[in-house]
Picture 1 (cartoon, rainbow, N blue to C red):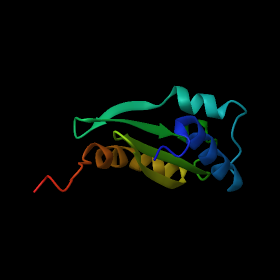
Picture 2 (cartoon, one colour):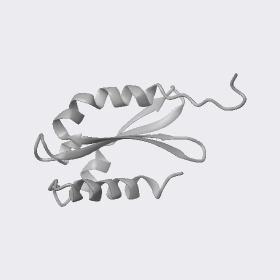
Picture 3 (tube, helix red, strand yellow):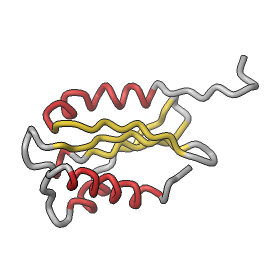
Picture 4 (tube, one colour):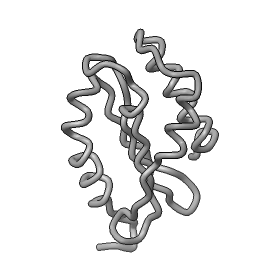
Length: 109
């Protein structure tokens, strides 16, 4: 499901990053929400990429990049957690993975 919506998830993930010792600016939540990148998975499903690296100070700090794909009644989350420098290098790969997502149901054979 939605697990509380976008803002609740980003806030929860922000707390997770802070608990790893990463110091974030006071307005980090709003900055992350303002910079979300919208796209479509399989040219069908509205999706967003939420990137914490822009508010993560040091290249070795822990941070998150998440892809969220919205389905009719639920959402699917793809989340990378690691050092800022490594996540920045792999952001495009995460987005490509999310874009390639397709839904297979019992009717698709």
